[in-house]
Image (cartoon, rainbow, N blue to C red):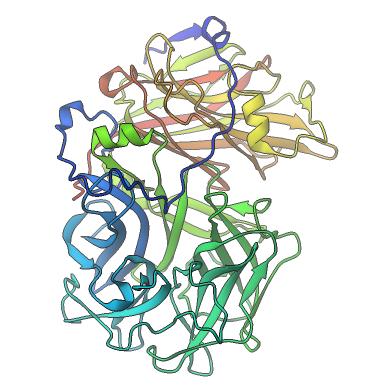
Length: 575
């Protein structure tokens, strides 16, 4: 198999650093555009529409809502604006699937129709009741623009497609009152409920008191009448509003997923909050005292923006559910655009969802591990396997025979000589900032090495996903970066560089990287899923057949590619 090799120096010198941009708020309202009916644009001039990521044919999409499996059918509800490509007019759109890859659109499931949701039907979750019936709890906006929680049940539980939903006449079932002192503008996104040993249901709702983020705890005997507990399940100072909270158990000694109500001696719990201030999803791992209904993060598991994240790139408002058909816990998330609002309006759509991920506790017990669902691999075609080889400093290897704009690639690196590893400065504690300062253009010793994705033939555009290895005080430290600074010649895009430290020992472990590439999205998984970074990119040259994929090494020291396998990806049937 022919491998193309060229020197990096001629184009790495062209790279330049950039700043970190503020992310767009999920509930920002664009009144000018809100009522525009966007017409579908011909697919021939839509280079950024994805081939196998979930997205509707047009308009705005954000949070995944109420995912579940029911009578063998997977259900995905999602926040959707039927009238335009910006946030507003939100309803619960609905799609179904047999495999989480191919999706069939159904009619809108929940839309404003009651006083308790007349001004909006926002995010929520699904719970499977003991008799097998699903129930949806969601946030509605009432005539006073207060956020309240509502209940909906299927009109026909025998219908596996759950096409019609009936709202409870008791709505709202949870609401701010003068007595409970809940902030009526910050009280949203109820979780999947869990059943306690006392026979009562429990769930949490995200909120804040000033800058203290918290998860209000509610209990119910019948799933209709809910009583607020005297104390939250958990709270943390200076974290701001907790959106889209999630709370679920994970097994300590098994990779299988657990039902949300599972308790036991070999079970930890995960509390996730989508921080409205930063637009990132953070989680802690800890202990749930089911008698006192208190969650306590483990020592070293930190609340807030210095803690662990599901994804260190563009990933927000995520939701997990227990897939009882395969005994796994699946994670779904929203990947917002990095293009300008005006560009979103022109293309007629905004937002996609990440590929569903299996999530489990790492063997260390200190973090989660994520991996794309196995089902996505059935889209793989035309495999390309390159032989093990050295990758000298300053060189690239093209991966030929691939539809590089729609692909799945796995690569593994081995480093043998660590003697020249750059010393990690003790002030380098922010990995995203470090990746911004030491992008793909900055030559190092052990790295940067990784992949050049959605690259144009002349290297005017590419997205680089790579590793660097530093010498720490007592061990070697691995940095993983996703550098979007050269992803597009369009100056209006947010090209923020993302980064994270990966908890792997490069002396005894090989460094693995998998990237799912789909026109305007790159989802990357480092260290067998210990770290994930998702990026939205919009090349102007490296589109469709003009996109290329390379492995590269811009360090002074050689590394070994022990495995490189790539596949073109077939198009999924989505909506």
